[in-house]
Image (cartoon, rainbow, N blue to C red; front, side, top):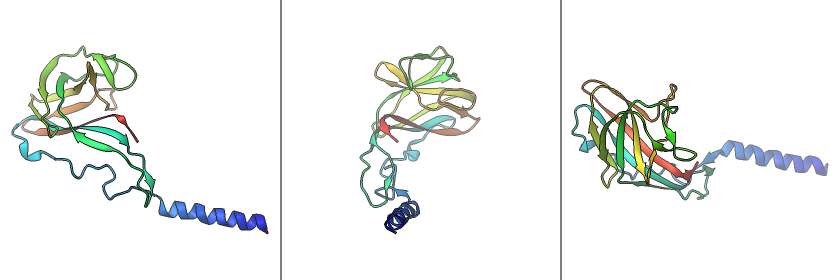
Length: 172
């Protein structure tokens, strides 16, 4: 009978964990609600605009009701490089991960984000790869199904939003 009682307690605790699930310490799990959206700053009529945010710390989910998350998201100033669409097989890795030392594709434009992370660049219609300068390396952490690095498509008469998340110092 003792084993069955212990098993029942374990089963009840396990079911409680499943029913309560994992949550976050606040209603804004990623901490982005206080960051500027910057949409009102867009003046370009065709091209790309967005925000550059630097993520650091722990963004792991926690059991509901606990406060284990210590992550921080900060808008940052960075140089932004726009290249013709570039595939992962074209770039030269700087080290493991999302860093690159050389981009052989044609550089189309270069701009910088401001202190709120906002950037915009006017571009002709087409597909481009966007990199940010992080130290002495280029950084990009997104890819599409065709192997293109951080791709963005510009269509005639439209401005495409691109969120750039520099998150190599964050844990998810």
